[in-house]
Length: 133
Image (cartoon, rainbow, N blue to C red; front, side, top):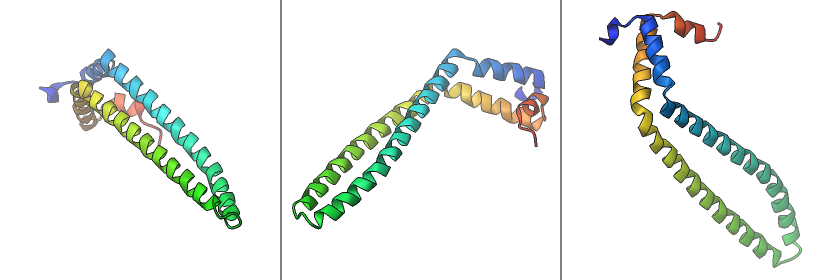
């Protein structure tokens, strides 16, 4: 019977579906997680720039001080180990976040179905939300 829904009925149901507190909570949680990931990437990028300069200086210095090359290699191995641990932690967080999507999947699928029907009927409420062309 979905094909028989009017545009107003689809809009009302889509609004109700996406306004569900469980959906809103999950979306807010995913937004916060994404912002935290972006902040971590920005911090890592800033650290990488300073690390390049340090590595270059150590490389030049190790030409003159023989044991310094070993110290540089040990520091790089420690850094690589830390990066691997961070990658594992981020993967675990991403898996947990995606697992939480299962709780709102029925609402998401219903919203998708209604959206597709509304597109087919060229409902005005979809056009209002579209960017100007």
